[in-house]
Length: 155
Image 1 (cartoon, one colour):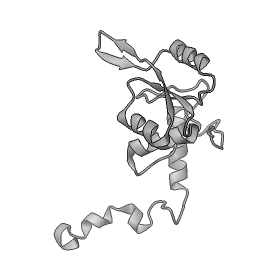
Image 2 (cartoon, rainbow, N blue to C red):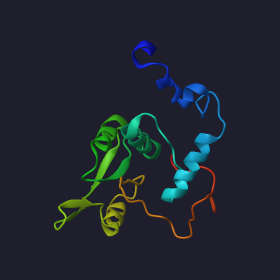
Image 3 (cartoon, rainbow, N blue to C red):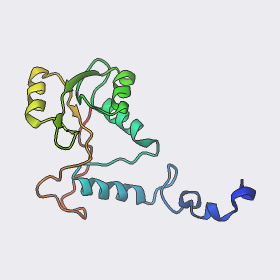
């Protein structure tokens, strides 16, 4: 391969040169990056995956609900969510998104609709909602101030 692409292409692979964390050796770079990401989006914790977002979605689902357990899902969920339902054996409880006729797109379900579905299914483990617009919690600041350690929940 080096004969085809040259040796310079490998110089930018910082993981192969011990420039960043890997599964065998940690210098805290990955942990710090995940903490900064969690802070940036107002989450308790962030986890990076090198396997793409579809595997991350399935992992998040399995962390919350197992086979035969209920999980609220938006009816316009990404195909990775549907795959997660099948693979994990989760029982989906559908919540309909709000369709914006002016912009011709679907917004996440309304909070009242989610609350209603949770009341109808009190045994549901929670809701998986994928949205491009995370909300910052009041009082959260960037830079690690007020960070709490430990997992945000789960099984």
